[in-house]
Amino acid sequence: MANRAAESLAAIRISAPAKINLYLHVTGRRADGFHLLDSLVAFAGVGDTVSVRPASGLDLTIDGPLAGRIPKDEQNLVFTAARRLAKATKTARGAAIRLTKRLPVAAGLGGGSADAAAALRALADLWGVADDMAVLGAVAETLGADVPVCLARRAAFVGGIGERITLAPALPQAWLVLANPGSALSTPKVFAARTGRFAKAARFTDAPAAAGELAAVLARRANGLTRAAVSLAPAVGETLAALAAEPAALLTRMSGSGATCFALFAEAAAAEAAAARLAAAHPDWWVRAAPLLARMPGDAVDQSSSA
Image 1 (cartoon, rainbow, N blue to C red):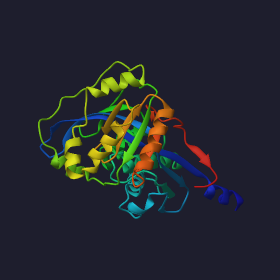
Image 2: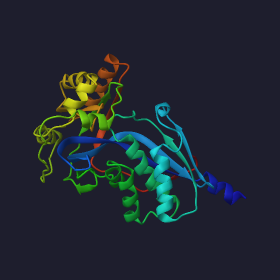
Image 3: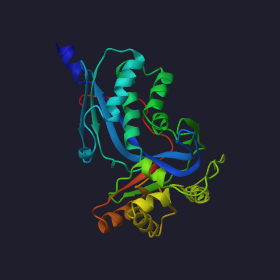
């Protein structure tokens, strides 16, 4: 009985970092209506957490400061990921899953996708299928365009509708200030509102040596969904302007389909000071300072005594 009790308390915890589109070009549209993209995706040192422990069936618990705005039943992408992985691996094992939600919803940060990818990693370890990355990748592709790159947990160029992933050159040390004005944007609606010509792919091969060089490279690129997002949520434009007004900001941009925007900084202290000023001036905004992560540290699964 003691061993069974200990097993029931053992938890596997995986971070689900915010996904950042350092640039995003819409390069075309398929016959089925899906848009083709070229984007450089990296991650920020802030995000949600997924933990799992053994159980007889599948169960999902959600907590955290932003838990109230996401479904807590089988509509949640974490639950869908668990079911599809169980089916793909033909496992009869269950899991008690806990999602701690810190990222805003419908925010251009890939929160739901990052959560699903973290759940896949944690459950694969729990169920003893962590070595079969081909199966994990196949399941990830069925869950959404951002899930495969969130599963990879590395800075990467993303093409197609999100399924084509190519590792990016090494990114330099840099810091971000993320700001969301509280506007939830529907990705399909933002794409539907996009007008104008399609852009060309804009990948690069040389590794920027410092944050300033990265900002210069990114300045020659853009987020092709910004105008559409601002037309639907003018607060996005206000957020970009507030970030651009920070004197140490090297670059400001919207991430994904919005509404979260970011500014790039060379120094942690400058980013933290800017975040403090923005939070004080806009207490209703979600504002965070975080390091830019080219690769998620601690990819190994952590064991703990509680979920």
